[in-house]
Image 1 (cartoon, rainbow, N blue to C red):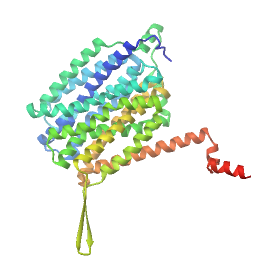
Image 2 (image 1 turned 120 degrees about the vertical axis):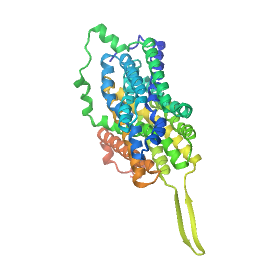
Image 3 (image 1 turned 45 degrees about the vertical axis):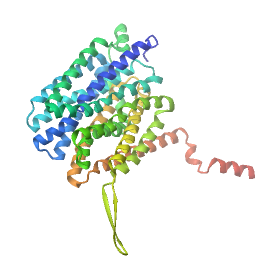
Image 4 (image 1 turned 180 degrees about the vertical axis):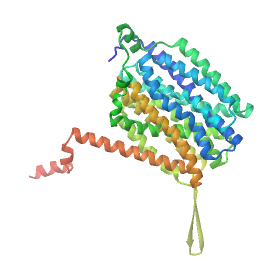
Length: 438
């Protein structure tokens, strides 16, 4: 294990806050289609399935690249890799303005997605600066860069209404390029890379980095992240469209209300990291999945009218979630998702300290694929069922499955560690009472 006792708190904080700012900017670019996609949908007359694919395509490339760039960050240093990711993402976002047809937009969206791969690079880089007992909080702060989604939802609609979607793409591209240059000039190489260079040690080969992926536990963590992060990305992309369609809002109002989900789903990740350090990541995950099951169930209930044949005529009941309770529910859902995102990544440096790049990359990739697949599924369900709340029905199935797998996996581990659990079927207080009477 690397020695970081000589690293000053000032250097740690410098690395953390620079990386968090860089990731925030990357995430703002990564989510750009959640706003400009609405105008492009109208421009190209897309159906909901085509729109879902368009807004999800950047998530695909950003997710698939995470595993490779995470390993690369471990090998040559996160500072260089993150700078390269930002410059490439900025270039692709600028080129997006030259697209005219649907296939061209999909190809451009793949390039924009490069910005999303910054997460696994940042996790590998930031974790090198902190000891295990502080990594939950540090990675929670870094992960709060998801707030970039809210930045796009609040600012991009105003720019788009004033000057069109192409101006949004150009401004976001220039901003990302400027941040890339500043990050490279102000940041430093991570301590493990410096130690390897002094000792003349070669980086771990790619095949060895992939060794932990044989463990089922890694893929269980990935399912958790499929919901807490993939679901977050999917809703961050889908909610403006949902609010416009289900509640008849304009794009500015929809963007503001969608930010009511994105902000807690991002900022409170810091709280999730702190709670994971203090109370344990497992407890945080139970709270996350338990509350999310309830929220998704309520949000999934469609606008329904019941007609009961009464004695004196039909009795009509109308059940629907108004905009105020909807906003409250998505705020709560976003809050607990943010706790879960931090808790998942608290596990990785603890269980796999030498493989943070590869394991974190795989978990991030699967989570990101959730952000790719779910918006497409949301659009397809809309077209197939004609029910707006079908997206939350799907999320309910995903989170219920994750909760069940986590609980039964934990019970298996408890039985393996304490085999007497299976033999002791009476309550302890009953056994004690019987012993006293005997």
